[in-house]
Amino acid sequence: MRVARYFLLSLFVLATSASAQSPADEALRDFDFVVDSLRTDYAGFPDKTAGDKLATFEADVVRYRALVAEHPDKLFDTMWDLLGWFKDGHLAFDSGPSQPPPAPPSADEAAKERTLAETGRFVPIEEGTAKKIKALRVPQGIWETLDGTYRVAVVPDPENRTQFVGIILASLAPSWTPGQVKFNLTQSPDGKWQSTFRFRNHDEKQGEARFQAKASLMEFDSISSLWKRIWPEPAVTIDRIVPSKDFFLRALSPETLWLRLPNFKNGNRETIEKLLSENSQKLATTPNLLIDLRNNSGGSDASYAELMKWICSRSIYSIGVEFRVSKRNADLYETLANAPDFPESFRPMINSLVSNMRVQPTAKWATTGERPFSIQTCPDIRANPRRVAIIITGAGSSGDQFVLDARQSRKVTTFGGNSAGIIDYSNQLQTLTPSGKYLFKWSSSRSMRLPDEPIDGVGIAPDIRVAAETDDPVGYVQQWLEKQVG
Image 1 (cartoon, one colour):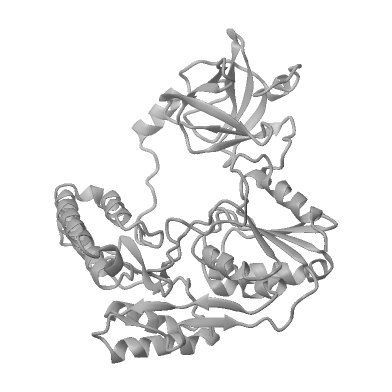
Image 2 (cartoon, rainbow, N blue to C red; image 1 turned 90 degrees about the horizontal axis):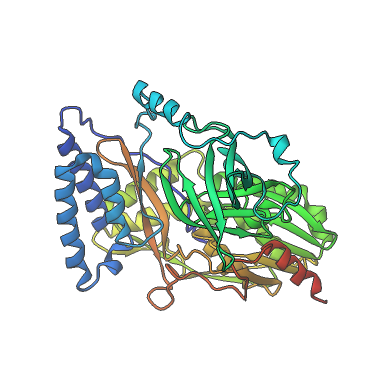
């Protein structure tokens, strides 16, 4: 039986009331709790603090603790800085369920937003008027942020025809109103687009704007959000460029299906299996399957078990993991195994792990009692899909593991950029800090591939690299698939 390497444990430890503590005492108690858990529970700690690195870490702990004592309100950011020392995507410090929701804007803040909505330069224009402009060229058109916060018309500047302005048509931000100029664009002699972008609070930043996918997507280097062109109709469908957050299976052509998997969260296992079941006839009669794994955030290996039946062509070999022995880890896994909604098939494995931790409390590492590797047989090699392409760019955790498993099939070719490389330390556990305000998450196991074959921070390289600036990576891979013979 395979180890469920990336099963997120959603378990909370009751927090001790800290009502009588000062803010500094409460923050320091949370800080000390996390540092202690790093030392005793986190699977990456022994490796990442080996040799002289331990002294560096302990010096940072002293420095960060002093900062928290002086500025308890900076605990959240300070903890993230400390966790960043380990460069492990499975370490996290998040707000707990007891944190109050964000307060509504105060009267002063609301007044400031209203004032901002009335300031700056106005170039009133209606969307219908913008669409009547002839001789369209980049970057003219109607654009919208991916989250729908802003919609703008990009038109030649009435006061300077050598540049363009992005004029607000609609805004969900109260500090911006229709007619205000959100950004300016000017093309330099070298063909690049220089920009002046205005943030929510109207502060300006100079930078560069880049157009991708045949001018279907616009990105400012001064802000993290992306803008999609909604008129004229974009040359490339947006989810071919920006990975969709939705699960779907679509036909790209009679020869190729496109399966999008944004994550492998345990709660989405049913969604994935339903997609496969409802489209089983298409899968069984279509020669090519394109699996879009871009930026897959991981979850549980069990979520892709049914998919492996469609793509495997021979037995799959997987290297196992070993677990950091600690009382907290054992307690959390024991509670997990006793949870009524925990998969019955994994219960014996977790019980074995807990037993091994309890029997050898002074040991550093424990296993589930299995071999250091597992073999998943492939008794039913399906005729279709005959060829499977996986775009692996940025896929992490269970996404990384899926790539390791799937690429062993003779049907599979991987494309894109490297996977995320968040897999060497895994099986994330979580618990509340003593204040109950924050949730600390850590990796409880490490791969037995270490130290010889690390993947963290590097990722898994694709068989065929697809440049990041490719206009339509999905179309590129589809064309490759459909050119293959046999």
